[in-house]
Length: 440
Image (cartoon, rainbow, N blue to C red; front, side, top):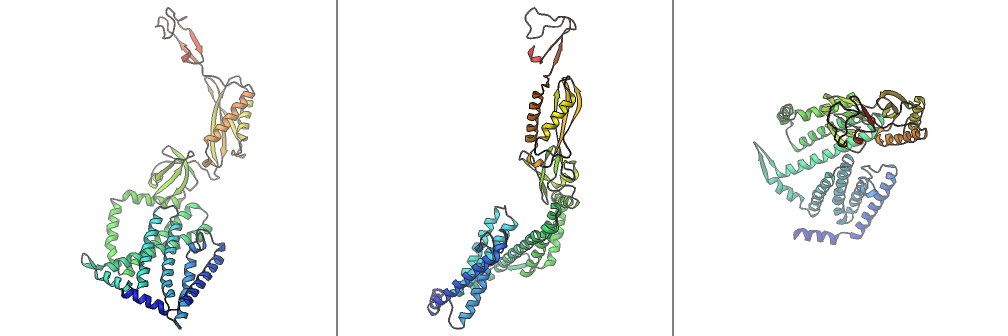
């Protein structure tokens, strides 16, 4: 009750309308300034966000103006509204900062909303305790509750402050790494693989440094981490050997650039395009939409076929058999024309058809053509070209032969199933031909 009486007394002795006017003016100026500054900012900017009030800039400007207005009004009148507005704006700025950084660093993560809600509840709760004046009392009570870790004694207040400090430092490190990757690496490094390894390295270093600063600020003795580092090293050497190998292999792949994002590869019978190279695994997407997650160690230790050459040309072939009485030059012209008519087929090198085999049923031709967008699929293009080849051969009256089979009956042998009763082979070496064995 004493807290409520004090708040009511402060409210009665304050100039509420004057403070509301100062607060409204501060918010209006902050909104106008944020919109003016954020005109040319990208939609994923931490400062602006998708709209003006969704970013960090608006609550920061409003906080500065409100705090300045509070200092000015305090010289003449007691303040109440502005005293409440300052912690509320501080809380809003912290929440906006954490939410925007997490969304930029992890745009497709479902855990981001949960973390946003957790931080919001904690920050708003601390703001309420600050406003009513209970924050020092609550902190003192938490400080009196201690936990024993071996020979060390740590209070609950220290643990909470350490967790919050570490979280803020981690968020700041993520923000710096994301900004560095977007503003510096995107323009200075054109190769996607090198940009990926540089971004991962910068993020890892910043997170490590941030964690060390956070632990040092809380009062943790960093020399004690040497024992933990030794234990982690032993764990990596034994239990986490495969995991460590995949991480090291990922950095080797990115540094050597033996495989790059966009390459078409075949790994263990799976063929597709590399869509992303993570630190632990590589994502390969096939033309039919299926995606394979391949550990990076596999790409280092096993045979991998890189189907993309330096200029990103991808060879596709299709085979067909025509009759022996066909004009070879005419067939080659029809095959090449069918491929050249497709817009996805490259003009240079031009499609070429080869007579590759004298098959039992006719002349076998192989049509070779090149494309530059294998991610769009090769089966659909091959189907369209095969249909054009079929139409062209039919228009030119070029025969596509049916398979022929020869069946021989030995003299005195048993009558094959399906022949009429009393029937016998014509001769010892008699031959019967037909379109297929099932016709007998």
